[in-house]
Length: 381
Image 1: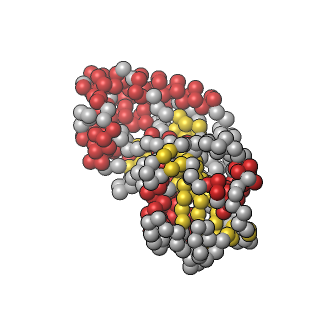
Image 2 (image 1 turned 90 degrees about the vertical axis):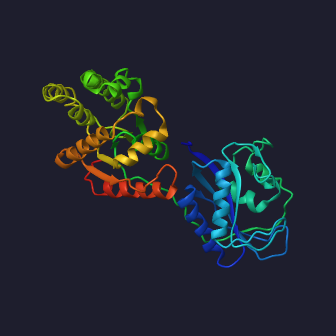
């Protein structure tokens, strides 16, 4: 999974409903590329390089997980959807024009993509709106900031700011302190937690299960290693959640975790004999009585078939022999827990046909669903 990058994109239109084309482009970039977090003023400018209608131009700041190459492909697709007709090696009137100016501090030179944009310094209609957003950003090649490049450009064309404004578009999460993302093995809970942490500046707590020496042995001989595995998880989770929560101020920080402590009970009930589970539950209740509860507990439900497919894709050797019956039991355990739980605010989300890692629109919808649940909570934050 790619991490977030910051891209600056020049947008322009000189055909048809120009202002609407620009806003439509922003909306589509939000839906397909990433959050449009800032938008410059709009400038009326003459056509550059050919005789044509006046342009409306602006620049936008976009946060995206796409690579530079995938970003270019997505922008070209958006241009097509908005009616852009490209004629090779020729400037023409256009409904929309989308150009990558910067992509973080990447320097890239390919046949169809050069970053930073090679004609930036000679285009006042790009430099002016870009200076609205990042006046002191230093050009990686010229070692000069955008304000100075604007002041010294050879382009002396007249540009005029217009009164209309474009609207940025980005995901937001309602205010809360502690969000737990839960799910079965292979449900995507860790990926979603990481994405939310990165997108909303949340402190991240990830379960450190990879270091558990009993886990590979358990998948080979569940009956023999169930109790030592569950007890080690119980101790590890308690130590981790206590240590991690102690680092954060839940009155001011936003914390997201890819597990909730109650998963210990859910897994243990599946794997342990009745007498073992009775003892285990007593120890759990003593250890976790003072651990803070999440404001919202989100459960990502996946069918057993989909879980097995996800597990196969991520390729952890010790998981490849997990039996479907075991996953089914875990799913049942979670659903029973959710059904009878009265102390937690729980949102169950059916993840059938949702691919939030690879589909920006699926991710947006998932955030909206979580937001809707948060908005119905009575939180004193």
